[in-house]
Structure formats: C-alpha cells, structure tokens
Length: 120
Image (cartoon, rainbow, N blue to C red; front, side, top):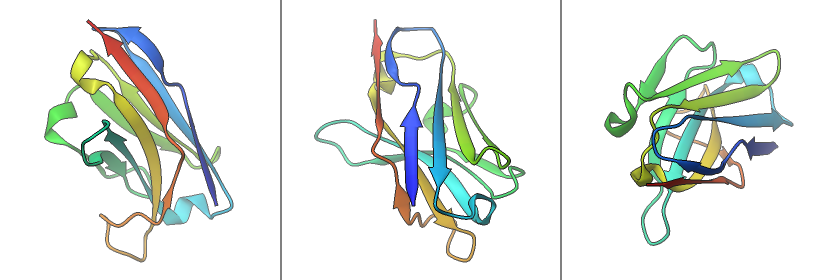
C-alpha cells in the first residue's frame, strides 16, 4: 500500500492550498480516508476524515468552515482543500487510510507527509 501526498508548500496567510493523496495497492473504496497533521515536538492531530462513499465527513473543530475533505474513488485520490490559512496551520500533513471493517478512528496506512508552511 502506498499513499503519496502532494500539494504542500510555502504560502502567505489568508491564501488557499489543496493537498492531494494518491493511493495504490488497496481497494480505495473500502477505506475511510483521513488527514492528520503534526508540528515538531507535538503529537500528531486529527484534521478530517471522509467515509468510503464520500457521504460522511468529520472535521476537527479548529478547521471547521475552512478546510474541506473530498475524495474521488475513480482516481483513488483524497483531497484536502484548505482555505484562509493561518500560521497556526503550519505542519506536516499526512494522509491515512482505515479499513471500513474497523473503527472509524483507526487508520492502518500512512503517507510520508507533505510540508505546509504559512507565513504571516
């Protein structure tokens, strides 16, 4: 299984970025997909997740209204649209996949991460 994130970069506060995560080696539509982020010295934190069908979406309180998770099962890709970025969003963002047969909060596979840096 491979999860490959892309789309990170250095941006100014207030702008938008869209992260992508391309999955291979798994039956994509059988997995809940999620995004997490981690700042050095801190624990990794949940950002958002989307059900296998794309119908149900859950967000951390700190991104509600600013970030949108979506998926395209035909392309085996999950996205994270991030709007109105602020410096506190600076982190490495990770994509994760969890089997629909397990608890929704459990993720079995992880990507290598993509750096997002927001300057003030």
